[in-house]
Length: 257
Ligand SMILES: NC(=O)c1ccc[n+]([C@@H]2O[C@H](COP(=O)([O-])OP(=O)(O)OC[C@H]3O[C@@H](n4cnc5c(N)ncnc54)[C@H](O)[C@@H]3O)[C@@H](O)[C@H]2O)c1
Image 1 (cartoon, rainbow, N blue to C red):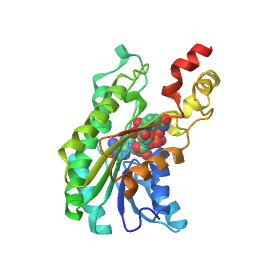
Image 2: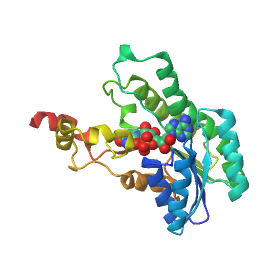
Image 3: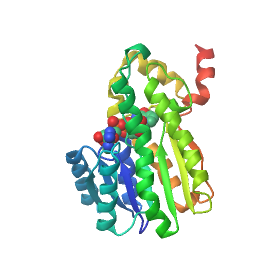
Image 4: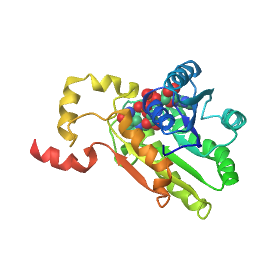
């Protein structure tokens, strides 16, 4: 039990990677707050975790709204009494060529994927300071480190998330609050449903993935668990890549073709 007695807020935890993180954290003894804009699905996840013997509660939130985030954090603290861990996982993505992106799509992406981090950290950090310890895990993406086609706002937001992670780690130095990022890729979730069933992409990416399979939500959850637990107390401002070797092997895979 690596998270016994800890309270963890996980945004975007109604489904996909966030749900995988919530389930693993609950198995490790944490009380998990499933914070998602999809309140109904969040309640389903809560019920699933509780039926497996875990402690969980669903909270409706829009991470792009400061008022909504403040309310959610206050509700979590009144329900569980404290807040030790924040996983900023909620994210959205529009896939289309640069010139077809609307201003609204650009702003929405930045609002959720980047401003959401600022708002959630701003609300959660005072609780961590009260405890004398805290862990923040920002779910970025390899798209924050590499140019990916037709994802201009997504790449910019995830690059921003990585810079935000390092800057906040510096701002919170000496406060016993670790701030780190995960950079996953090719995880089988609803966000990637269209690609997981595309034969051409499945073949190309199947070759490029050094471990020869798509990632599972548990693969990312294991990284989040490390960064949320005492095991990573000497790790801050870091980016942990969880991509099946995809980015390390891109050149090699292309050369083999
Ligand atoms: N799936 C991948 O391969 C992959 C790769 C790299 C990074 N990521 C990142 O991992 C995170 C989770 O991705 P996923 O694949 O599980 O996606 P997903 O679409 O399955 O889940 C995202 C969740 O975030 C919630 N959400 C969206 N906007 C929100 C908002 N404004 N407020 C609160 N909740 C909101 C959704 O309701 C949903 O439950 C995202 O940040 C994504 O960018 C995913």
